[in-house]
Length: 522
View (cartoon, rainbow, N blue to C red):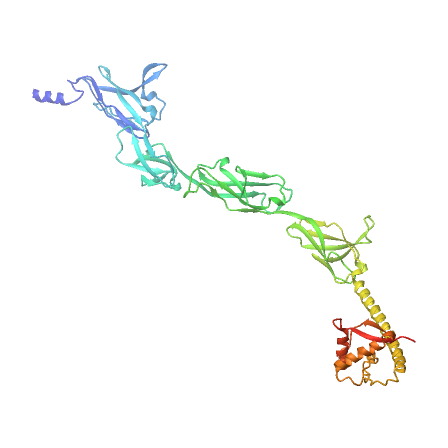
């Protein structure tokens, strides 16, 4: 019987033969998790445990002080005693935080004694740590995710990016992979690491150029260009460049023209650069923006074709101008009367870009102006004087014809006088040579100018007639003079032999030469 009682006393903690002691081990807990600190205690036989207490060592004013857990400013359920009054002193710590790390003691009170553990237990608080290698990459580079813990690594870990589950921890980065990654204990997702960003860099894209104000830009107004892009890293001020028709204008995100002019019209585009290349190109251009500076009509002028106008001729007046948008109206006015004074009046004489005068008259002489209109206003040209010159060039042909007529008339008079004298001389000659009775050549009534030509009957041919003619002329050499008259011949009406006679007598001279024999008065 006694041996059985001894065995029971040995195996029952806190029984009649136990020692005063507390045993536990150091613990490591992840931030946010719940941990149970395993603890055992014992006491001698005859004691009955009446109370238990867990305390933590705090440093107060540089002095280590043991403070009961119930006095700490934590939620009521932060520390929960899971032990009993018979040897189990385990303590559960919920939602472990860094301030829970430290040294803990356990003490108990019995009916005969008060006992505090001689050695403490130490609670370490660690966090899950996410490692992203590398944390900054360019698009197309590889990335690896690793979850690290100071405590023994949890068996199962889950990955998240921006709150959404991620299942691949090794991947080739693209811009959509950029975000904040963290790992968590499977089943205790609130036990998680601090998020770590993955920075995926890429060259500028969606480069755009805008113009403010939008719509029509009127000459003299202000206009501002804004360049934007999506890039990582973002494009700096010096990374933007503005071009007009391929020519560099300025650098920077914005560019303002305070007083825009027509010369500013053109095609603009923006270039963005952030030192990240794409397919070997590190400068990305925006689409072109056409700046169309509009203005009212200007530089108006009138041209005249032809430059000199005569009475009865046609003339066109053309009105030219620069305008944007193009002029939709041209109105012509004539100053009546032409004067530089303010008293002159304007009469509308036509419309359209060209004013045509089909037949120039005196009433068309005057000063003309052209009034040009577009949607922004109207403006008039300088005056153009339309005048008419005298028709000096038209009188010259008449004078020439008159001169020719007078010359022909004078020539005709001379021919008639010579003809009259020849007739008179022939009559006198016939009277003088009547005794010789020469054979006469029959006179061609159609060409009576040659009636004074004689030949001898013995002449057998045209040649002998020609020689005999000149012998007769030598016979009367002292009484005959030769005169030459230059006229246009009418040989088509002469007999063949007369035409030959005239050509032989003239020799190498012009066929228009005829010879008339004039007999001197005795």
